[in-house]
Structures are given as C-alpha cells and as structure tokens.
Image 1 (cartoon, rainbow, N blue to C red):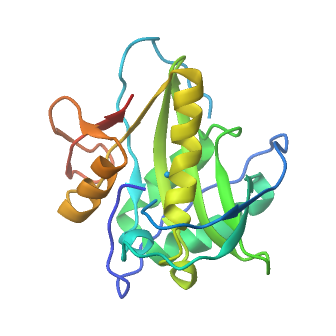
Image 2: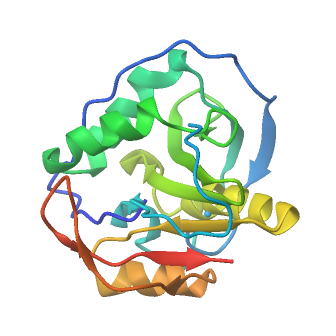
Image 3: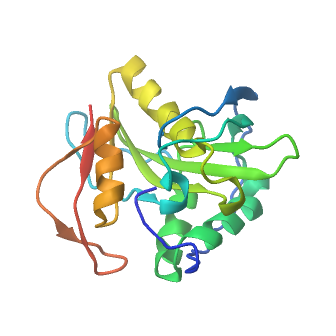
Length: 210
C-alpha cells in the first residue's frame, strides 16, 4: 500500500468481482520484526506509472509481535473480505482506484494473509505493467492484526518474486515521510518527477525497486 491513514479515519474504495482461476496453495508464515512487502501489457524495459497505496496501520511499530498467518493467492470469492479491510484503512477518495486495481490485478501475484480463524489479516494487490515490471497497487493490513509484521510478509512476496525473475516493482506511496522511509528501508527509491494523480488530484511520487 502506499496510502496513509489514521486509525480513526477509515478509508475505502469499492471494487468489483470477476471470474478467475484459483491460483497457488496455502503458505504458512511467521511474522517477524520489520515493516510491510492483472495482467496489463507494458513495454519491456520501460517504467510505467504505479499507484501503490499503503495504510499506516501496518507499520505503526517497528517492533512487531509474532503471529502465524496463512498466505495464499486471492480469488474473486475473497473480494468481500478484501473490500472490508480496505474500507477500514483507506479513505473513500481511493474507491475508484481500488475498483480498477481489483479489476486489473495480477491474479497470480495478489495475496491475502489469513489468521488461523480465517480472518483476513492483510492483502496485496499487484498489476503487471510490463514484461519485467510489477506494480504494487494496494497493500492493506486489518486494524485487528496490526503490529504483527503482516505488511512486511506481503511486501516481501512481491520483492522476492522480482529478485528471482529479475523484475522491477513500482508504487506510489502517499506523501507521508514515515511511509516513504519505510519503503526506502525495504529497497525502494524515488523515480522520475512527481505527477498529479488522475484519481485524486494529489501530487504523487513514483518509487521503484529493482
């Protein structure tokens, strides 16, 4: 995620379901200290615009409590749970962007982290924007599961993929120093010049991991 919110200010966007093939199996992970980790065609070797959003809830404390989660690829059946978490941590001005992100997601690299009670602890929406580039659209962590390192686990899924495939990851975090520094800690750097968001009208700065 790249967007920031205060716990008392819920954020949300409406997304739409679509038919897709269920991918991948479950993966059992243990959270650790740290912060958080669609198939559109793009031009190989060219960095395209990213719109990554992240909630502050998932990085509110550098000292994370350990908690076990199951990580798996999200399907259309998970939409309601993803939408509920999204609305709990993102403001309504991102509704349309979330809708588009869900519709255009890379169904093979869009993950959900689930607790042992099958509660959605967090989600990661990505989109393929070029042959060698993945875009982080939204990364959200359930307020009930914050401070558990869930954001880091999700972020590292896409970063590990990029390292193995020699791909790049892009995103646009909110203009919030704490979140920008969190992404920089995980290897992201600013790329290009700030531009106005077509969705919100906010000034946004692309970041890239390569």
